Length: 416
Image 1 (tube, rainbow, N blue to C red):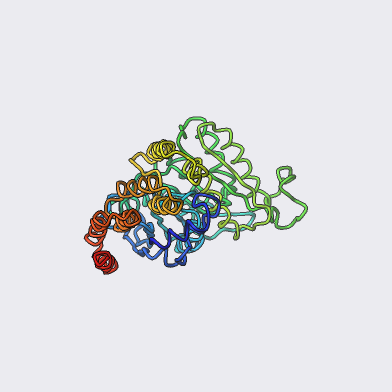
Image 2: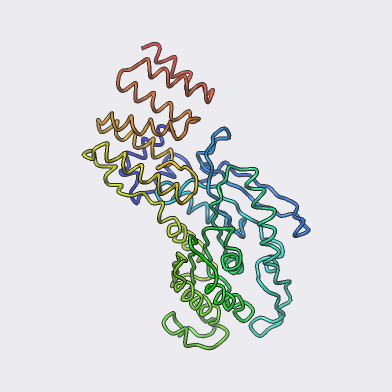
């Protein structure tokens, strides 16, 4: 890990736009997400078993006290690689370490994700079982979420992501069950369903309900707004009255409604060159960045400038810690551990030992069970020719991990 962070710092600013360097310096995406568990529970509500996967954060340690926000991804096995690609590239500056949960909707998808029963759709008979969204919501609220919370170190800060019918499900969750999630990403949702029934319901709910503290990102795939008329564009689609443009018109109308709901933190984006099937990737990327805009680090240039006084850095870190703690509802470090470590090494390289010590010390305080944090502090003391303290921290790293690497480092240092 030490060399991974060291390379990260050499690339340039660890808090600038070049965030992929953090995620992929020495590890492939697959290796990053090695903490993947496939599980299932039998649902009394559904009367069947339901599969899901869980991806633990890259810094997860079983004996650590750190707790994490959670992302729930509907159609989890279909969109797993999409979420993985986005999260693997943007955690750190843009996104916190989080637990990811992918829920299977491979069986009875239309039943589980649609909000009402229908027999006809777009002028044709519709033979699928429908209208089970409330039942599936009950499964998530009473069975799946409690199971995840009991088994993994979570906090009650949840994000829900859904595409198409799952986007309809996501909007329904916000409109009718907003207590379960803080954040929502609805990807090209089917809001035309059942003669816009959910849209009409939202018009009434938005007048009465309190959505303060809730955030929603909605996308519209606009490459083909009308399957039979290519002259229909985003500029004139609202003047069309055919059923073929109703999906797009429903999303636009809902977005206008959501934008007028002052308590709701809302954003919509039209993807002009994307189809319904291609829009999940850019939506998840843009949606997560929007939802966690408050998380993005403030004044990165000051952290990268050797002229910034240490007192100012400490003040900025305290401010960042306060922002994170207020949003998550639990004490939260001002930086992920990889960045605390990275800034420590960067300042060592720049000949600023006092700042380096501050970052390493903060990393140990925030991550007292991290062998890597103690190893980094040992390197700091080695750079200061303080063999006694270097050995002290190396011994602590070895005590925590039992790894031969630290034992060999101790032996080598003793020979000097």
